[in-house]
Image: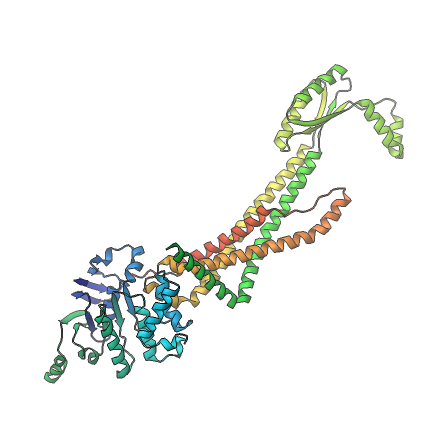
Length: 236
Length: 305
């Protein structure tokens, strides 16, 4: 069953070239998909289109068979709650502690009280930050902040998890930690979409890849064997 | 569902109160500014309202004087009296005959040399019979209508009221009421601007939270909620301060006003004990705060998508 479907989607910001042009693909429920490509290839834009933060200029985006462009503005917040978002710059709130950061999506969903507290601690536990629930985010390391952002993304149990460059500024050990977290979520049935410019990260996993180059989708592989990139590199 | 909703709102109010207490001094200043601003039109209103009250006191004290012709016959007087009795526009009346008036004049003249000289030079009673009439209504229109109908009675020489004076006073009071309205509207606008600006500053310090909340699926009303409460609470605080200030000022003035009134043999005192006025001030202030916050947040909300 397809959970996300792009059909001939183009996106153009005012007075610029197409950031994405004529992109079509389908993501099935429960898949782990990587979106790859260099900086500026359109990865972030693609994720924003998936999460209904941006609207396509042409083409249709279907999420759960709902046409995102045709949704009323008032319905969008409810669609967005289906997603867990991990942003490139974390977007943690530095005026409150870890626990309160994770509480935000639950409050938005109207969940408070002991049930909310249970879920928050479960999410913190999952990313290994339970002992830091009272700490302020600014005191955490880069890797811990990223994990906190992931905990916030998953606390309301979304069916789709979207992460934009989650391993961007992390060294290899931390990055591997984070990637295994995403695998774990996929294994419990969450659809996971990860944008990365880091080819190493994805080759370790045998998964679907959407490779973008200058706004065009030039490769949809499913699944790619670990040796592909190496052999391509050897040939080149 | 409803319990969750109430819980959430209580939580938001608590969160707003905590933030206000954290910036206690500026919160107090803000409420003070609102209170003082509200005080101005309210004081003006209390002034015109009390003048109005004073004026209607005076008006009820000033009857129409109905002077009869010097040659009015007893039959004419009785006929006039019958008509006065039957007129529903008249609360009460009393007759002072020319003899009674003459005696009274001589009596008051006895202690006063000038007056007694005048009385002594007169060899016959120059005074007419007169009815003193208290009208049922205090409005200038009703009084002048009554006056012309009395004037038309047989045997009446003059029906006198100081209607010009009442008209002028009423005109001035109406002008005062209009000024209260204009002043109140202008200051309400100023309040919207001031409160809106404060809320906008708060929004600036919470832009990150607003952005993230919108991105992860918060509805606009969710984001607006704490700011609306903040605005309404500022208004509420300001309204209460305004009531307190008004009460203090009126008590302060009253000690003097009562003294002056006593000199004139009146028991007049300024009143602002009207619960309605105080309630009106507080509710209006709260509404203005809420409205200002609404405008401020709406202009800060970006529409994603």
